[in-house]
Image (tube, rainbow, N blue to C red; front, side, top):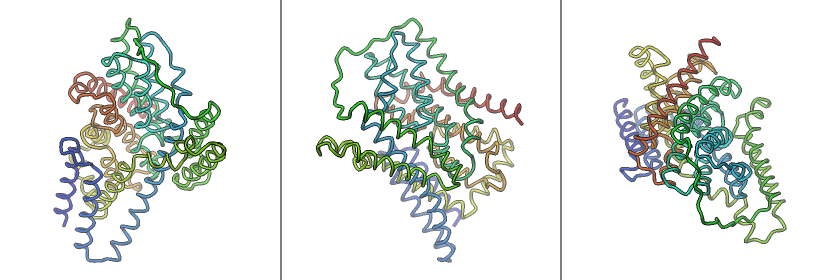
Length: 426
């Protein structure tokens, strides 16, 4: 049984990692993996009641993450439909490329901590198209946006899927992860940002000559209201969890309901054609359901390995072979540049128990940093990178040549800051 489980998971993992060459969506591979693994496990154990209980337990943990992400994605789509992000992006104005690089880097860093790194990347790259005419300039900015978005998401419980998983799973708490990972994440951005800004010194911004047509159907009041309310709900969810001790998915669904009612009241007097694109129903049709299905498949797949005690055995082997926790976590971070960081973190959560490493332990905090920022090293290593690749037609080897080294230096700098900070504070 154990051999069959490992073979199926490795093959599925390879299919996920090679999604683009194979042209097979990773969500399909993840769902087939989950189905096969649970079937093999159930047939081998032979106790339907026990397997049913374990599957129900795994499904409950998976559903909490999926419901949270669904609510957060919908809120972001509603804000974007009202052009709410123009509140921030319209204020980015400068004539120097190096100054623009600093502004874009910091806005992306903090925006991705509130939204998520994928949405922030799309918003900021869309902004660059309005500000920069030269494709070569936009490529460099896209590379830095990917690094900044992944760095910004790593230190926030709602900014990156992997950090959100650790937060919902109880491995980290809101304030602790912010305090522990903020400075390392900032360092992982500042180092590559400083290098690129130095390379761009003396160059001026060349904006596009054509005017962009305004297709906005919402008023300034509606734009500001939905932006403020949407971001307020996202920021309030960690507070909701801390105060009520209820799971985050309930807080995000509660906030989604408030936003839904407010939106319906604000647009109730508009005609149907103008109102349709601004509704919550329309926003739900635009969220990335493929990603949500992928999370369901991969989390249920990893849960099978956990129940079969394979992950515990792997953790024991790593401890005996490598020994050092910091090296193990840094290896996981670099590996997340090659394969998806979601299954890596899910596997780590199954490998190491909360009894062994309690909440806010060094291992979990450092894992949040490494898995979150390590994906920047290759453009296929994160959702933000894949989005940038599609939007600006970035070639894999161009990114390796121009950006990967910067991202790796930033990754090491942030890791050094975290380890130094941990030594000083503990």
